[in-house]
Amino acid sequence: MQTKGCDPAAGRPRRAHEPESAPAVKGYGQSFYEINRGYVRSIWFERRPRYHIHGPEMKTIIIQIVLAVLIFAAGFFAGTRTRARSRSI
Image (cartoon, rainbow, N blue to C red):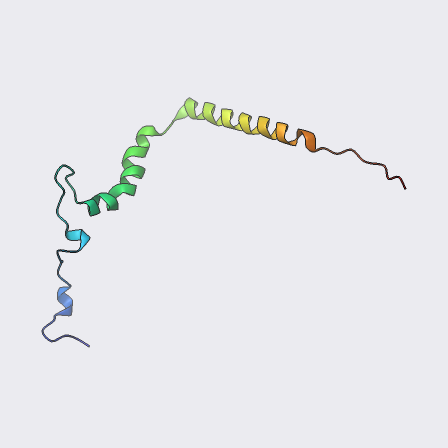
């Protein structure tokens, strides 16, 4: 059912209480809605590449992690071996 005088092709107008139409906050340059919407994009595509590790540094870090895991596993499983027990009746 359609409301009289309403043109469905025109879309709906923006309302003042909708977050998309919120004004920019002084000192931020964007509305809080825009800041929240762009946060993940900002982290993944603008900030993350600055801290990305390349080349030999990354290889060194991976080697250290693998060695730490192997040392932990060797210590953890050292006492788990069991000897074959003879059954005595």
